[in-house]
Image 1: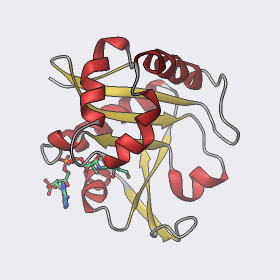
Image 2: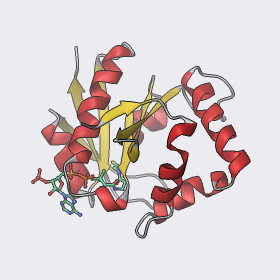
Image 3: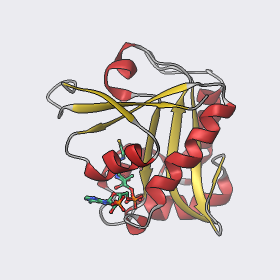
Image 4: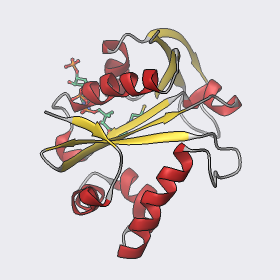
Length: 171
Ligand SMILES: CC(C)(COP(=O)(O)OP(=O)(O)OC[C@H]1O[C@@H](n2cnc3c(N)ncnc32)[C@H](O)[C@@H]1OP(=O)(O)O)[C@@H](O)C(=O)NCCC(=O)NCCS
């Protein structure tokens, strides 16, 4: 059974394999800086810091990250922003997620958001904004399957596609 866990060195090999998978260009670009030994440890520490609101980059809000794992294998990542700033309210939303390419189309996307909403509740959030690009039908289905109520479509930032905004009540 898949579960959300806190990122740890235990999943290092599997996480790095996921980043290197064909089709993981987006993941690779985001995580290439941690592809060597020393940086991975630092990466885990940074994730912990961000969850406590420590050493945040300018304009960033505190964010908790969880990894979806099954039988010690890394499947995907979900981050929960503890509050919304102007950009997050407009297009980013509270929750971001991705599933490693080799595990897509198997229901893990729906599961990671379902489990993520429980974590968001534990963090004290009551109403969650989740967004996706208009060209992302999989993410749209994931949000709707998890109770997302469509609010509107807005123009994405700096040349990006339009964004669909949904709210999920988790009280
Ligand atoms: C979007 C993403 C998380 C989907 O994960 P997933 O594990 O493939 O999702 P699921 O298997 O739960 O599928 C959810 C639904 O989308 C459908 N789907 C999956 N991939 C699809 C695709 N490429 N095109 C159209 N529909 C797709 C599934 O058939 C399923 O539909 P159903 O409800 O009719 O059964 C994954 O593709 C990903 O990580 N993409 C890159 C990052 C990203 O876009 N994150 C979301 C940001 S908002």
